[in-house]
Length: 416
Ligand SMILES: Cc1cc2nc3c(=O)[nH]c(=O)nc-3n(C[C@H](O)[C@H](O)[C@H](O)COP(=O)(O)OP(=O)(O)OC[C@H]3O[C@@H](n4cnc5c(N)ncnc54)[C@H](O)[C@@H]3O)c2cc1C
Image (tube, rainbow, N blue to C red; front, side, top):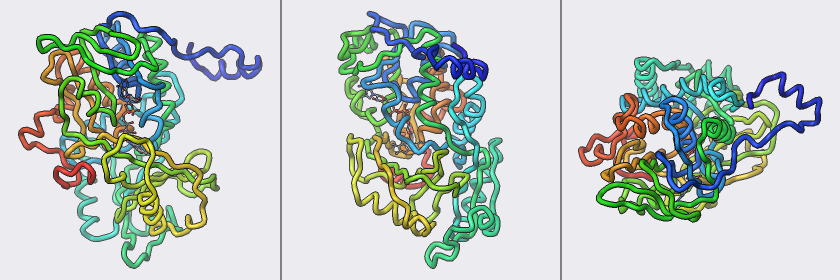
């Protein structure tokens, strides 16, 4: 079924009776060439690109709950490629380019909105760092602009420019950054993968792996054993649990990250904005709610809900930046489980077990990576070699000390 303006009008005139479910609900087959564990954004994108770009078939995605019920449907929807380091910037810029053509590619409205992102600057040293970052972005073919204090004031006059501790001195802007309707991304990839014959199997939790003579043979699931030539794991916050089935301990910790949505307001912020002196980022949804977030809850957890101290901290950040929100009512909060790696950057790599591949360690930032992550993981699965933009995302960087540490925090996953 292709979507078109004509089809929408025709359905509207005939009572919307012609729409059909956009993916099948198949039972698992006894075996596949490829099994992808995890029906989040990354798993679905991997299956889609495996079938579409790399011509592979006999693919299944196994999801323990429902498609899009994990972080892909829980994030604050920000996309950008404003990274500093060589290992990261080409990959995230590749992802942003894929976002730019995604809706045409899978013929699905994911509401990709390049409304621009600004990172506020509060000190002279921060301006130096932002200039360096902007130059690095431009050298990698991305877009970046340094905004003066007056330019920021023209955009958002209601910000607290003269806060005694955190005066606003300017911003680094990436005009091509923005937001995307997160769960529509999962649905678009799911639909595209299903159309190409991928079996999307929900309510199917992987509970074990069958490994013989150093080679993966298949997976044990709540719906029985399923054989596979190759298995790709893309389970985000559950990475450590799933890879433990293969006897692997990962350089990853799981933490909760919370998100917040306010009551609907009149148009206030037309882009995405991040505070440079505390952890607070905000945009406004098309329904008018302020969508914002901050730091992770500092302790390890597999719960999809967070705690009040972090809510208080995020609210303080928001108030320091935009005191006008003091009287705005909060509508909803929720949490997702983040796969926080030791250096804050992801892993897309083979494992020491033949036929078993891993994708994870996305920390706060895996939503924007979804298209490139899927593409690069599919490349690795199909060709057994890393995509050129993902070559740095190897396990052995932790052995060799080749960290990709954007923040310079060291091996402290809760601080990345
Ligand atoms: C509150 C919040 C805000 C965020 N904001 C942003 C943002 O603005 N921008 C950004 O770039 N990133 C953001 N992120 C991060 C981003 O959402 C994640 O990094 C990314 O979605 C992770 O990849 P995924 O979509 O594949 O994960 P998920 O959607 O979590 O997919 C993993 C899937 O694996 C399944 N699974 C787990 N165990 C098993 C098993 N044993 N068997 C079968 N299936 C299993 C899970 O049920 C889940 O559906 C945010 C995250 C949160 C929680």
